Image (cartoon, rainbow, N blue to C red):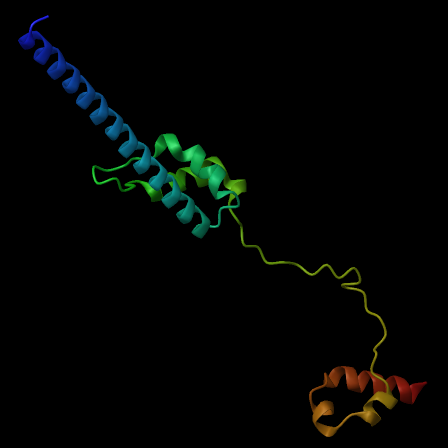
Length: 142
C-alpha cells in the first residue's frame, strides 16, 4: 500500500468513526430528552393526583411528543388520556362519611341536672336548648 492509499484509508476510517460518534451522540441526546420528558410527566401526574406516577409515566412513554428543543409538548393531553384509560389511578376526592356505628340511633341524653349544676353560665349558653328543655322536663315528670 502506498502512502496515498494509506492516507485515504485513514481518512475513511476517521470519517466512519466521526459518523458513528455523531449517531451515538444523537442517540444519547434523544434518550436524555425522553428521560427528561418522563420525569416532567411524572411531576405533572403527581400534581394531578396520580397514585402511581412512575407507572403511569412509563405507560405514557409511547405517546409523549418531544419538541426540537427537547421539551415535552403534549403533557396535558397525555395526562387526560391517562385519566380516561386508568381512572382508578387518580385520586377522587370524596366526602368522607362518618363511620359512627351508632349513627341515627337516639340514645338518652348525657346531659343531667347534676351536669348542668357544674357548668358555668357561658357553657350553659352554648348548649342545645331543646335538649336542655327535654332533660329538665324528663327530670320533672320522673
